[in-house]
Image (cartoon, rainbow, N blue to C red; front, side, top):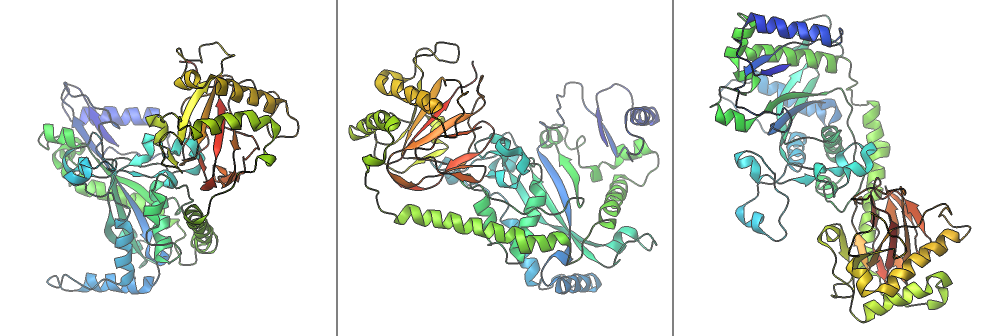
Length: 530
């Protein structure tokens, strides 16, 4: 526990006693809680433990037995320990070189002035200290807990994080942790690499999934550029996850406060010796106390972990998880080839269901006349267009002329003004689809207040903004003569060409598969009232 307090009382035994009494009274009795540091914050300081933190540091104890040729790595490290001090460099085994390279691929770049000013500039860190502000942010949505679903959508800011550093911090053995104690479990000379991650914040499971990915890369089960692929905002793909129980938070930084207080306040725990001496009365210093705490953590983790080379999770990684991911990568590659090589699709109006005829004719007329409105900036961020022709591709919204309530903005969208006949036609179509039997749309669906109308628009993975009022799901249908263009919802594909589909666009990530030809889509929804 790190205690930061604002009080005129002196830092001493009375304060320590008060804190210990509070812990004993309010925390579970089976928790082993110790006070590592106490810092007096000036009265004028405004501190928020999370928002004011500029960097978090986590460690993961990676068993070398999970790496290929781990015996060679262990032997290399042990020879380094026994070597004379003046011999500093040993040629690292290939596995260690590849491990460092894989970890490096997870880090964000240091952005130069030209990169910052580029029209296609990457996301930069916000509200961070000094050079940390120049670090690139990546979309880590594929490295988050899958149960988050839409909360981990790449169009949500929280998944964009800056990973400042990913490196091998140290090597330890079980003997280092347990000493000569008889309590050691397993091989006392087994080596663990302590992998350090420094960043502005981390998503649930992010570090474990980076570790799992790195292990997959080292075993040649995943391509070396997999982290680059998986942090693209237009890609949704599974990532391997390493076992829990081997990770702990090592430290945190508050750079702004450290600067204001000239390093006397909010210094890292291992430098805060005077505070510890005052609080803990004659202790050997914060460095020893912190190391003792980390040792206890590692004893709990390493003592009960399955770390052998044939551990179940490693076998699952190589036999099932990575092959499944490779198949997904092959599919993504095939879709890219489909987009670039497939020729145009001829129109076949004889196969257009009667209910769609009027709407399709109106849509085609707008395209042929080059009158398609421009796309809003917010929607343009999550879509690409198969046609670069101005006035012939994009997305706009119309509202239901039959609904008059607070969900409808006033004045109506420009789409209603420009295309009143189309606005009426799309909601008439929704009414017909709701009446039809045998399709996937329930007849109980209430009329929607809005409809997004898309032409030759390919959407990247995203979730919709807002929340439906009285209607929890959207309904989508595809029109026109095209091939491909399935709708993906949380990884499941759906052919929506003249086949309406309901799905929760506010919770579930969805995107468009590549297509060729003329593709329109209509998405009916009801946003929450303002």
